[in-house]
Amino acid sequence: MKRIFCLITAAFLGLTPWIAGCAASNTPETSETYAMNTIITQTVYTDDSDILVQNNEILRRIEDEMSKTIADSDVARINAQSGEDVIVSDATAQVLADSIAAAKETGGAFNPALGTVISAWGFGTEDAQVPDAETLSALLKKTDYQNVSINGTRVNAGGTQIDLGGCVKGYALDRLAQNLNDAGVQSAILSVGGSLYAVGQKPDGAGYRIGIRDPEGTENDYMATMDLNGRFVSTSGTYERGFTEDGVYYYHLLDPQTGYPANSGITSVTVVCDNGFLSDAYSTALFVMGAEKGIAFAQAHGADVLYLTNDHHILTTEGFASKYALKITNDSYMAVS
Ligand code: ADP
Ligand code: MG
Image 1 (cartoon, rainbow, N blue to C red):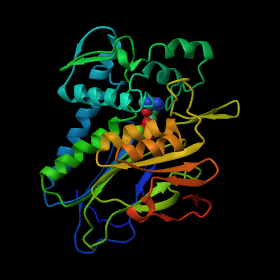
Image 2: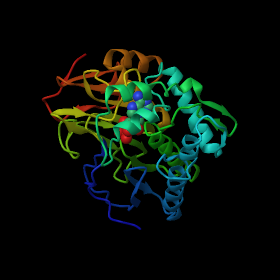
Image 3: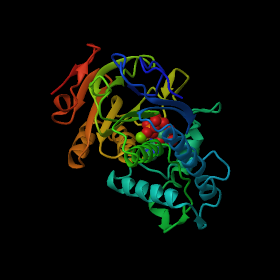
């Protein structure tokens, strides 16, 4: 599956490997697949052609266990029998436990038990619609993550519906990165929807730079580029899975307090940290929190963030620009220090 590695132009959902030139002396293993409702691309410098086969098997298993739309997945079974105990895989139990911990940590801004409300909106499906207010307020009553119990691999959703869409892609990145690390891979870039991981340098010695999507542009438009080495980055933005009804645009990042799209004055938030699961869960939570609260949260939790506001301001945690060699490529966006 060797392919000449030159310019990657495939569309990604928020963050994109931004490769400036061709790698002259080496060709990587590459893969582009579709899973978990998103495009997954992998570029790995290795002589072991089995690594991407392993990685794609890891992805398939995660989807089979944690997708809520695959009928016999762990999450589908938990939801079908909400209020009863269900035995799940070790991996599902771990992701659920971590997602409940993230809910507590973010004061519920990230809520993996928001499934009833998310399904009512139907984002990304043909049935996408604005639920009526009465329906929403009834469904909101079934979203208390504190009712979810996890004992080992025994899970009870306590009347809620689980939706791991806000963290499972980041979790998948953790697992892929771990597999590469175990195999001694020194250079790779992986993209799972709006989450990315990159490590090392390309054969020409250059590090990996990625693009931060312009929320008002198309999927190939970036407003800035940044370095990424050995860390995980996730972006949550209004451009993903939205729809317009009666002239109003509704997007898939919901405020668990109201059940409506979080209206926090921002168009995207990009979160960098040492862990894919957390970068993803935090990106969803920090969108809901808005810039002021989100920057304080990130600073207290070892994450770096970059917000884009509705009025094109760029707000970041301290030192973001120099740490990641941020280069603003669309000058309608203005850094505010
Ligand atoms: P994506 O890469 O799909 O854009 P995000 O990390 O931005 O993913 O998370 C959005 C997804 O998370 C939604 O499609 C929905 O499934 C779920 N979601 C929406 N709002 C919340 C929330 N407040 N807490 C947890 N999950 C959420
Ligand atoms: Mg997320």
